[in-house]
Length: 88
Image (cartoon, rainbow, N blue to C red; front, side, top):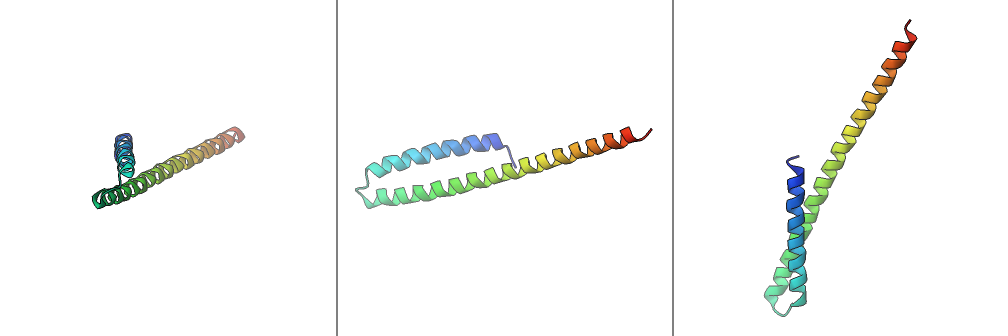
């Protein structure tokens, strides 16, 4: 995972740009070139959304591992405290 906040910002900028271009082209579909550009932009948008979902899954997985590690550490601390209080 490399520099997630920067990547997120970059992806959001790309998302805004693609969305505005798609809206602009959707208003004027007179020429085959405009239709082709719209199709290409839609594919770019789908690729970007796929990439963003993959990043979200990576973040979720990392958070899940961190939460699991925290729970294990907490359980270990409780167990150690119980053993400590039982020993005279």
